[in-house]
Amino acid sequence: MSVKKITSLRGTGISIRGNDIDTDRIIPARYLKEITFSKMGEYPFFDERFQEDGTEKDHPFNKKERKDASILVVNDNFGCGSSREHAPQALFRWGIKAVLAESLAEIFAGNCTMIGMAAVTLSPGDIKEIQTAVESDSQVEIKLNLENMTVECGEKSYKAMMPESGRQALIEGTWDSTSLLRSRLDLAKKTASSLPYMNHFES
Image 1 (cartoon, one colour):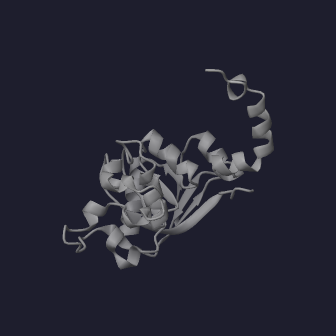
Image 2: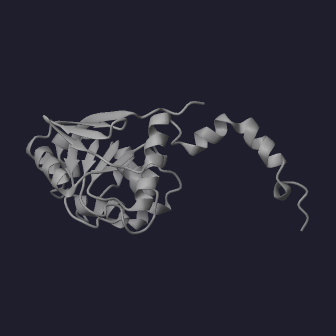
Image 3: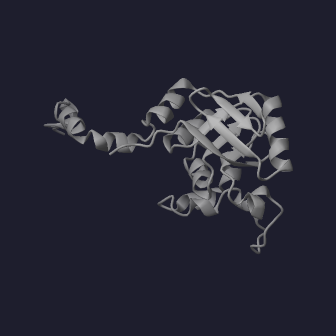
């Protein structure tokens, strides 16, 4: 079983402004009871997108011109709070393939990598410039190159950063640990058979 190598991504953007946007805002806690991630794409920013009667609020994720956006552009400390995997799952299943941020909560960024969603940081000035471009033109294309760590937005180019371990996992196709383990199942079984605590355990 092979895992997709992710060396570059491109798409249109969607901007969410504000610092310290936590995982409870990204996906309200009541949706964590579901036992699969299959419906998570319905819930990102749910309480900020809908009134109690279900009518839509004015939110970027509700804009028709943003429904195909795949690059999320955010500010400082995005994904802080509870370390719920559901937050990146909700964004990914909505259609987000990469997050560009001033800074990211460490666990949130790690969870993004584990599902093949690139999460990179840029300087605050560069992020605000990209947000302005995205908000001004819903069709402006953003290109993220993970090999040389650059972001192109329209005619401009910016330097991006991310932990090297995450970058290597994405570009080498080793980001999906479950698929990687399954692809080497014989070796995993052989190792397990040699571990004392996996064999002949006596209570």
